Image (cartoon, rainbow, N blue to C red; front, side, top):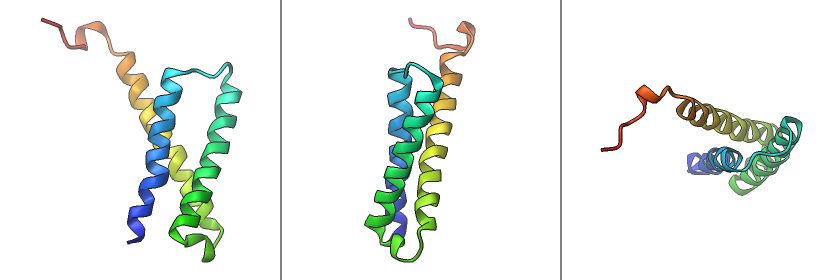
Length: 93
């Protein structure tokens, strides 16, 4: 049943990537600060909800890393899709 709790940090990372794709923070430094704060907060919440925090605080780091990795992957995919050449985009008929 512990696998179900892995959805929390991964989905938070995906949501964060879509939020940053829509609303760009004023500076990259602010973007990374917001990402770090949200990642640690979500990692702490996920570890607490799943009960892993009672075993080790290291699970907060692992869950936070899942947030960051999901965000980085989705951001990369969104950026790649946005920068495709016009010839590779679907033609609207």
